[in-house]
Amino acid sequence: MLFNIYMKPLGEVIQGLGLSCQPYVDDTQLSCSLSLSPDPREAVAVLNRGLEAVMGWMWANKLKLNPDKTEVLLVSRRANRDEEILPVLDGVALPLKEQVRSLWVLLDPALLLGAQVEAVARGAFARLQLVHQLCPFLEKADLATVTHALVTSQLDYCNTLYVGLPLKNIQKLQLVQNAAARVLTGAAWWEHITPILKELPWLPVRFRVQFKVLVLTFKALNGLGSGYLRDHLLPRVAACLTRSSEGALLRVPTMKEARLSCTWDRAFSVVAPRLWNALPVGIRSSVSITVFRKHVKS
Image: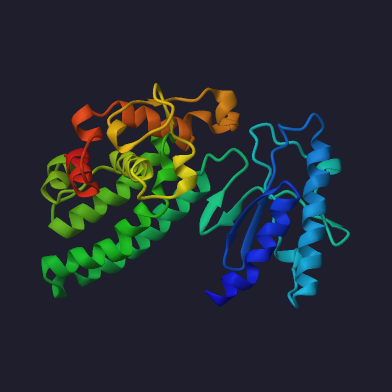
């Protein structure tokens, strides 16, 4: 907590230059939109001034910024590799990366998350092999606890990012869940997986992702979640959302309003209203998060 207080002024310095800032302990991310500027080089110039300000603040506060650990990702399906738009840190141009890790999530320029899905599936399968070796020694309840701790927790980590991904990517994660369900229940590989998932009961990966988005939406609308998510949810009719309008529909923003044209159909501001509006009004008007989760899951 003291370190976060110590680092707080750095975010104010960055935001004062017109850049977005996402700090997490000693890992600070700067972002700017090239599409909002007529010349991409102007946006990069602002980013360079931000990097210079960060460097100066750190020197003044007895910290050191390592250029070798500073990574740059250009999010665009038409990635521009022009050297003139490369950010500069301490006189050294920072090359654009094909993928960077943000809070252990691998991001790529098109945000397709192919590398992330591969890494999660590979790691989860490796842990599942360890769980399988424990089957003869643990009761089913204890085995379920270990399975959730080592395997399904990997599938659930930041899984809202997987919404709208191609089915071929979701299927890789679904194979992991299927294998975990078979290990936990002792079912043979040729048995149909749907009754096994219902028996546990586990939602398939695709619906598990949608469930997480809907829970975040309910929390945001009812003051239980992060304020920045609430800012991305717009009512279809009412000027503002109150507890008396919890069952109201949400407006799906246009591609221009969502800003991220390359991932418009997967943005939270687009996916959340679509899923929310598809729910029956009785579920949208649930009195508590516990009741909402129960009804949405069923």
